Amino acid sequence: MQEIERKFLVTSEAFKSEAHKRMRIVQGFLNTHPDRTVRIRIQGNDGFITVKGKPNPSGLTRFEWEKQIPLAEAEELLHLCEPGIIEKTRYEIYSDHHTFEVDDFMGENEGLIIAEIELETENEPFSKPEWLGKEVTGEVKYYNSNLSKKPFKTWSDEN
Image (cartoon, rainbow, N blue to C red; front, side, top):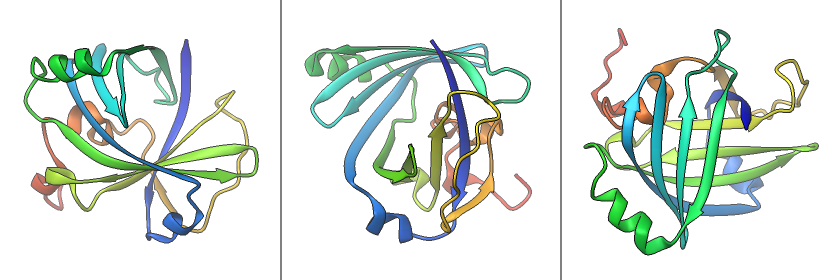
């Protein structure tokens, strides 16, 4: 139940032509405490509840537990979430034997595009597509739980 993940900013929309799958995601947070978050997500016609723990010092690894729940329950639970619902389109792109998940945010986070890749180990090598930009792994301002409270459109140059 450990998730090892690296995050990157995306420099262009070239990833869209490489995507093999695309889906709309709506999610909210029942809890955004820095030591643990509880997320409700609707992905297509499926609902999920996810608990994530505090990341390790490198920001690469953290506890993650997720269960699928009925769509109607996820829709009801979204009404109980803290303010700041996240909406995004997720694209899946194969790269060698890995998959990048690229989130193109909408609403108050429009303009932000983040790519994530899950790895088996923190030092696992992977190919970097040309559209992959600066690494932001461990930068908490890019966590969805923080984007729900301080959206990308509110950021200034000094953030």
